[in-house]
Image (tube, rainbow, N blue to C red; front, side, top):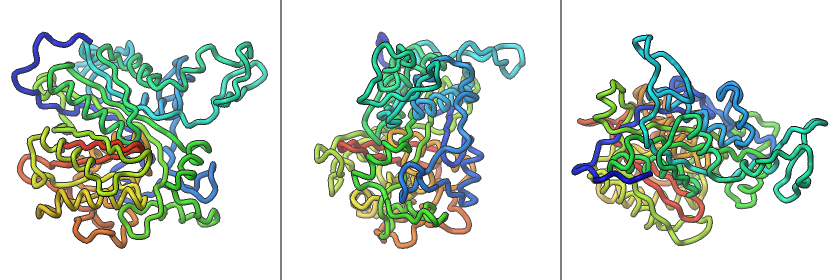
Length: 447
């Protein structure tokens, strides 16, 4: 992408005009909000790892969602989830995908394409499918990571390696959604998709792109993905397979009885534009992105920095970019994995930033509803919060009975959901995500 001849004298206000999500709670904002209001639990026993739980996306038919498209076979399940979410977000924002001729509001003109030089910022995780299936004359063959069947095998597709390249899903999104500007793929573990939203917003804010599409999708519910988490000691593995209710209680963020996270899967995407451009074309903003901060712990490959000082720097950086103070924050969507080390470090961070300063924003943990969607978690959690905000409430922390901290205002499970906190000009929220390798991301939004 060629940089503009000059940057704007003042930054643009950046809004989300389209959102798409494929989640364990449902595929539409209405389904997601309804599931949370009813207390629906998407958690199940993990077929690939007895004793563990998972949160799969139900009723996902990639062929129906993406239409007839020969390149679909090169996408991992996470890539397919990302693509479907991106198609939905683009269309919801009022833009056409592919060569669609969908009629506009007046019934005569087709929808416009995304603006020239629209940027794409995508989150990418590893393909944890472990095996890939390829068509062969005699049925199907399975290609293991370390045992390719030979270059002349009739069932080996010429471009099989695309399933393992980090930018394949982003390339598919660009093809299907008509993105022709800068492409950026982030591999910052579980901070990736939240950071992608922030990076997309920065490009729009400073005139580096007229619009941007942020997207993330991930699935690690295969045997390989679950075994990796199990070996790392990150998930609970002693659930009774005969107890159908056991998975529903396995995810307990910030509770003293927590014993690990529940792996989930999902995809989410957002179209971001300058506020003035969105209003000029008649779009209805769903949220405003105010600021982002990102840091590295430089501490360990998996464990978080115990006192979360670098994570705190990411939070304060996001607030500074937004021009806000901790006292301006109405709610926090915590990373809240339910693991002993991560939750403890995050509690210390939140107590320093808010409690020590005399502030008590409402604290929720969306993973208690969706499971941990890995590199897609931030985008999925933002989509869930948008759905709940549209219905006027903040989701509680499921299974929270004995909070580890008495200084934080956790949203407790009650019969009536807590109304979305809002004072003056909207409801300001802080989203947090942390990943392996000490990746920290914080995003400030106004709903």
